[in-house]
Length: 394
Image 1: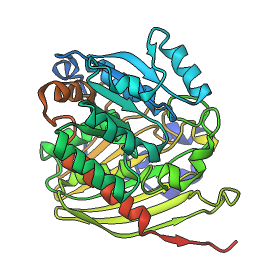
Image 2: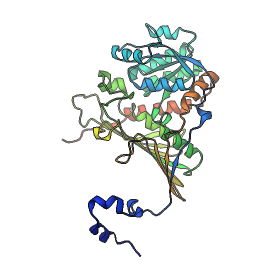
Image 3: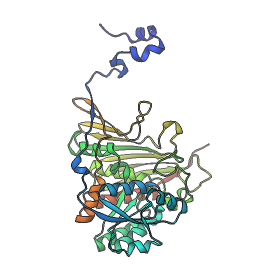
Image 4: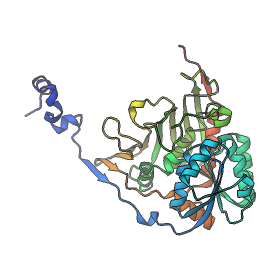
């Protein structure tokens, strides 16, 4: 007997609608098999095999706490720190009361026991610091964007070639998001065939309620100045370019088109609150949309979503929330020829920290491919530099 949707909806009360509807209707008429899974932790990836000593030089953005946490999980010992903004220094000292404080960056650079330096100082100052760090015989791990101009990029590449040091940039929306890590595992296993395109939707919230993403206590002056933060495509867009390159496997790519706008923050003329870009590489395509318009009602700093299209299926990652369903993040959906699957990725092990520490010790590039890291920076900078600035009518 067929299901008469109109008759059913007319006869049922609104209060009982949700529980009375057949499952096929609640699922929008979908009749295929749906599998619910919970991804398991990989204890081998979680085990730290090495120990290193590291320092923090500059903590202008609260991303520094996530970066420190990753290296500590990998076996790193935080032994020294240095900063200049009084509020950031006070917060860092409260979090890490036993860490020795350096009066200057040079004190860190000249300490032979320190193998790695981390920084989230003002974005435009990160590359010059990283160059000094490498020339001092140490490896460097920066918050994104790790480089804000093509001139800086050229000098970073030159210094890497001369010193053989590691210049890492923690693109955390892939490297430190469990759903993104699981998506990478599935792609590598061929679960959706060859990847054709990635789409990244990356909304952000300017004033956050709490957390280590920055913005909980208001934004500093440099946040509003594109010469310092790099511009919207170079700054938060670098996360998304990294994902495009990683999931498609592109080793060469170009920015086909990019645009930026300041729609609602005219009191900050050197700020952009919207931007997007189209990317094309030797193994796939990419599209990125960025904005600073996340409303308070979402309950988190941004509804970040990743879509990966393959020849034999597709993946969606709802990274930080599942809107109007659950506040839980790390939700992965995958569809192939056989079924649709939901995977809870919250137990996934984050491999970046142990892998990066191993790279420092063994002079390898397992955690992050050095060429891909810098190509991400290059594309992000070019997208920003060549973007059309659009003025919308009121």
